[in-house]
Image 1 (cartoon, rainbow, N blue to C red):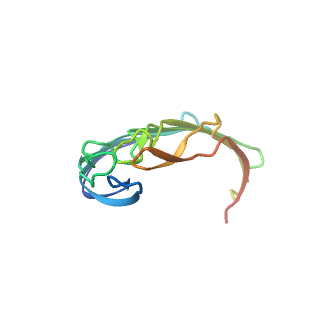
Image 2: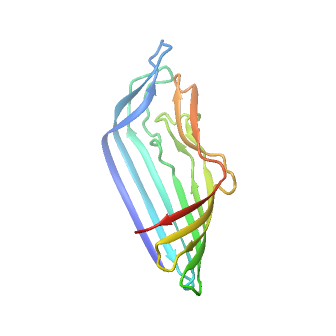
Image 3: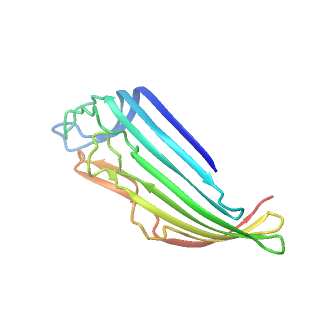
Amino acid sequence: MRLNIASFYTNYKNLQVTRFFQPENTGFGQFITENAGVAHIKGIEVEYTILPTDNFEVGGSFAYLDAKYVSFTGTPSINGTGDFTGNTLRQAPKYSASAYGKYTIALEDGSSMFAKINYRYQSLSYYDPNNNNLATIPAYTLLDGQVAWNSPDGKWQLAAWIKNITNEEYRTHVFSQRGSRIAFALFGAPRTVGLTGTYTY
């Protein structure tokens, strides 16, 4: 078994933050970049790998993140004073985790095959410093699987795979407009299957 644990603390001063800004008493807006006075980011990361047998491997990771604007008073806009002090940073999910299991079989001709399944979780994250409920990526879970064959010399690999097995509908990016009254999102790929051939030289 291998276990890695890391903790960290970052004190940002004048952190540059991009946000959509619509001035008061106007119908138009624009993306602006401002400096947040102070932001603190702290957390812990854990990674592990376990080999119960010669053929079976499991592993994964867990992360906890506390990322806050300690002092951030931006330009007032149509939706408020511009004071984001105490809010969560953009693209900073509080929890994220992953896990995998892999089973390998050695064949008589010297080649090998393995089956692997991957799990990934991410908690809710904000995409606006005002923590607008429209501009969020809600928590989601992804599950992928793969079966592959490796040639005896290790140069060839043929793999069949399936991504997003549960056909989860999840967002990958969000941005808001019109003073956070509307938001647009990009979504991740639906369930996808395929074959991949790889040659290493």
